[in-house]
Length: 256
Image (cartoon, rainbow, N blue to C red; front, side, top):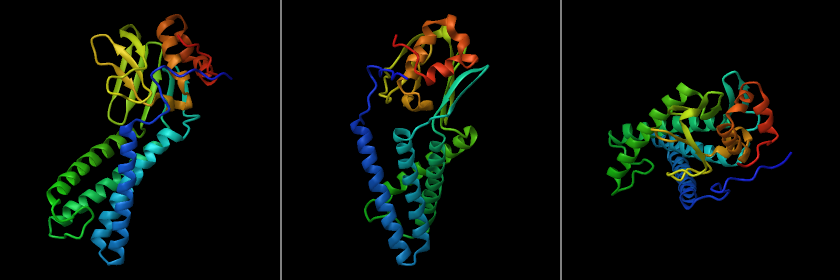
């Protein structure tokens, strides 16, 4: 089995922003966990519940990031008459679910208890009460919104490549485009999405698939596959009968 070359704009390196985010996440986990230990040792059940919820939240997000980058999504791909579908590792959905649930518990408890005068809470240090309150309100809104979206979709994302067009879904929305409206398939996104497949659509916003190297454990072969079927409409029937699926597994798509 050959290994497909990576598109020119893909990379295995982390951006500075990603590294900073990981450091912030690790620091948040350590701080929240330490606050939970202190709360338990002092017998403060309300502070402990708040701190444990926040710890679970930050751990879940770190877990999702780790699975996205490190864990294989092998076997999470299939085909049908609708086309060939590759999915993100479903473990990411579980990590997001745990994180969002922890975020709901931690932020809600913080806001509930702080409104009743309890100051011995994580992140409730003198001088930053207003900032902490706004951060927790934002976390609560994001967590509730994300949890509802995840319960609705029940998966973190997929890309379906069909005879008539493509469809990409994440936790929050689904976008599709017909092949005749796709004017370019590229590996460069305006918003610096990591290792993307970008479908430039006529008279519409591009459909951006970030972290496309992690879909179905396909790596760069998925990118060359999408370009192949964009450029060769005469071969698109392979997408609905399993031939494209097998070619993807064997990485039988030449860079084009």
